[in-house]
Image (cartoon, rainbow, N blue to C red; front, side, top):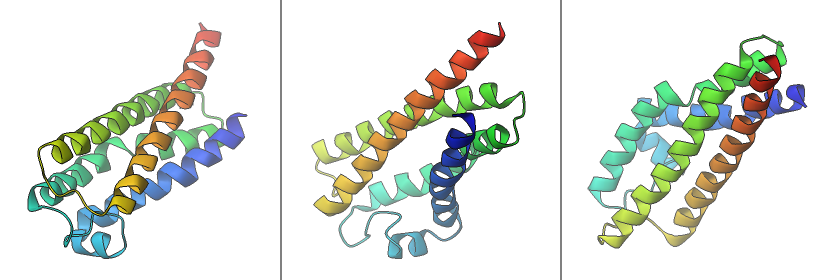
Length: 145
C-alpha cells in the first residue's frame, strides 16, 4: 500500500505542483493551457487572487510529492511529511472552494461553468487525497508509538 500511495502522490500532486509552478512563472501561459481561469471570462480580482495563490502553493503543495518520494524510498520520515501534506491538501481544497463560492456569491465573474465544475472536481479530489493521506500517515505514526 505504501509504495502504491507513494507513486500516486508523486504523480497526481506532482502534476498539480508543476501546474502551480507554471502559474507562478508565467500566469498567462497557465491561462492559455487551461490551468488557470480564462481571462476573458473572469474578473481581475479572481485572476489576481489565483496568481498570488500559485506563489503560496509553491511553498505548501510540495509536501505531497515529497511525501510520495519518501514513501517510495521507504524513509522513516514519510509519515510526518505525509501528515503535514495531507492536512495542507485538505485545508487548501476547502479554502479554495469557499473562496470561489464567495466570489460567485458577490457577483465576481469566476469563469465558464465547465471550468468552474472542473476546478471544483479538483478541490474534491484534493480533499479525498488529503483525508486518505492523513488517515494513513496518522495510522503509521500511531503504530510507531
